[in-house]
Length: 134
Ligand SMILES: [Zn+2]
Image (cartoon, rainbow, N blue to C red):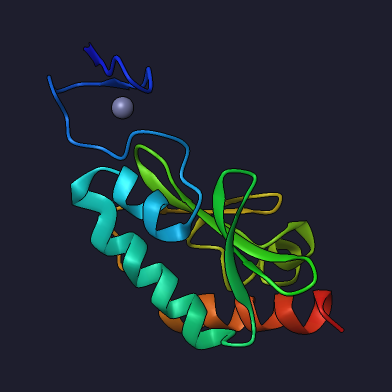
């Protein structure tokens, strides 16, 4: 383990390149993640942006967030999966369509080696936007 003397984060590799500091923008967040998962994070961001172009991107709860008057949906990188956080109502409404995914209340976990279910993600994001931003 190597601990960055500037930001205190621990990394497996010595002198691991990373964004030093608390990400203030979605770009900084993505740049701060492991290089291997950055393309997937850009992919989910593009998917969500296409689904809800009216929403604004910002950081909230330390996660990239699509926002319009309130938080609509968040995403975040974990060690083993991409987390998508549409809220508990959404995961309940889409439970049947999400039955192949690892879900718990408000959270959808998609392993990094799995393709993103693009259409379903867009449908969920649009549902959240319609439901939360009326
Ligand atoms: Zn650092």
